Image 1 (cartoon, each protein chain N blue to C red):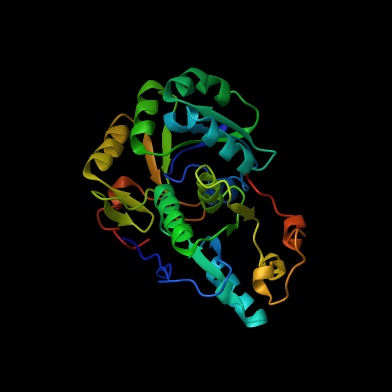
Image 2 (tube, rainbow over the protein chains, first blue to last red; image 1 turned 60 degrees about the vertical axis):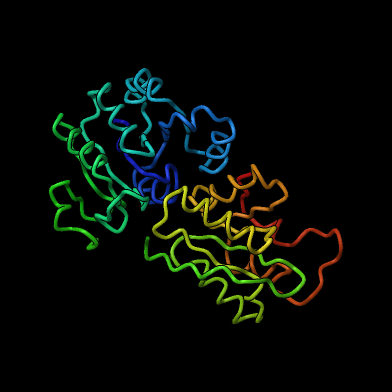
Length: 163
Length: 137
């Protein structure tokens, strides 16, 4: 499976993704699925110029990602697909059943969200969306960096502010 | 909100030259500025910021607020592909006069004229601009 990680992270591409996850897996490409970034030349250029030159970067709307997913999965290089929010990943997994596991990385404080872990704040609706994804058979793994303990949604109830 | 311990915005800026901002992961910026102060006594010319526990939108807002408060013209960031650097470069869209230098390290800050009392020749580029750092914008 050349896309090793399907990740939700509100920082999109950043140090944990490129260095923390990317270096150990010899990252070859990143797919950034975000309708706003995909529609903005400025944002696309910003991310293009920031990532290491040996890492290819693809931008996609959800529609584009559904259409291109099989090609990325057949790529010989190893890749990471990122969305910046839970709803985008929910929409993607609904239309791309090949995605069987989703990694939840940083989702930070915002009004209406409750702290569940140091790096994870969720609204009621967001938690419901994650649980709905899991109910459809998508494994939800909560882990900010590879060396952290992999948590499941069921671990969250007693895990607030402990990670 | 979070346990981010970014220092409060100073009420005013002393001296004739605006502070430069150092925006980095964890305590890197605070440590670098503290080291500059130990070596040159001019750590006050830099304002350290951390992205700790902040999402991308919050980093953008923090940086925008601090640049405006300080009148900063130079932002140092750590990782080229990091959220700090993307926030700084995103700010360039509205503030093209800003200078963003990524790959910050102690020699780079010490080579900045802000770290010394020695005047730099007019029109001569700061020495750190030729260092092996990569500006994303």
